[in-house]
View: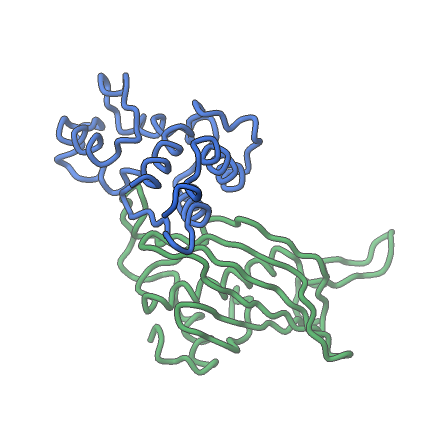
Length: 138
Length: 171
């Protein structure tokens, strides 16, 4: 792929914002980089599949399909494994797996109280942009 | 048959496309309430757009279900977009032309064209577009468990498929 076809970070941000506006029916001014998908933008579980499909459609080119494998962007099904979750909290093994599999997630303070229920708050617009950018470069 | 809003399947391209039709009849109770005569004027029997949406969901849902031989419990999860620009009344036929746009283990998205046939002039006219998302219930993110029996594709669907000549499915 020639460098001319590589999208800049600003272009990626614009495209991701458009995907979220369409998938979640939210206003563009609400889709800030810090906005969380669950909390601020009201995303429900089915919306994530919608977002995955729309990202694939938006960032695929005839030369290079943009295909997101299950469990690549979101820790779906991961959190039902008892060795990864204990008493509603993600275990050390689970956190290590999250870091390895999902480097686009900024775990930050969440690590000190790693509740599964609060995992959704880590998914920000920025984390999606980072995910797409990293994947396009890869 | 209860809550079936398609009459038969007229075309099927495996994993890709399904076309179904529905003949709208004056015998359908709901047409008499939608809309009944009132102080503003005479009755105006029209197929409700919500049921046109259901017809597309059933067409596209069968298409999505057929991909895995109806082993998955396919449920309508989201209406991404629905635009209906024309009315359908008794004596007219609706055609639902559904295509799978994207599919993976968790679900599928479909795009469907709604058309109306008028028997008086013998012409089909496109009257809408409906984009839907379906979820495979057993592949949900929360890991919730559902009964083993496939309650989505029950007797009603098998009857429609068999009558349309696709009896090998879902038997």
